[in-house]
Image (cartoon, rainbow, N blue to C red; front, side):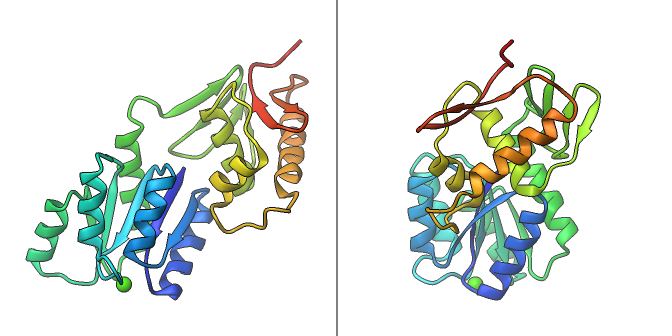
Length: 224
Ligand code: CA
């Protein structure tokens, strides 16, 4: 799952990013309201987390503009203010939920699960043949065996399974799993794909991940 976080305090942003990455989410960080809107205009997110106090456009304005553009992506507002007026304003601007800083990370994760569950309702699992992943628990199974994946391996698998049958380029995979925080010359995608294949091969001789030379990778029903 891919999340946009708009937060101008870099310490807070890095803390949240690291915590969410450990839970297998992919995070892009925008440092002000203008950048957040640019990300929203060019990328697809499963959730947007908006700090209220942001430079250029504040969180309320960003949320209003997102909704004006017809985008119904779930929005979680983070506010240091506790005034009822602000909470009402947040919800009026089109936010789905809000959380007051400081918050417990467990509660934060629970809110995120709840908001993304609403978005993907009826689709708690992705399945390709005998391979299945649970989008809520982030657990992966091949037949009855659980496969233990590292966060980015899980991210790649989820992204590929959401786009079953389509060839995905390295750049697409980098953008969707690592966010914008990557070096385009890296071979990190190939390294992770190799490791994923190896972990799948521990339980099955079937080949799920196919290479299209010069184009990228595709996940599909096993051949043969
Ligand atoms: Ca702020």
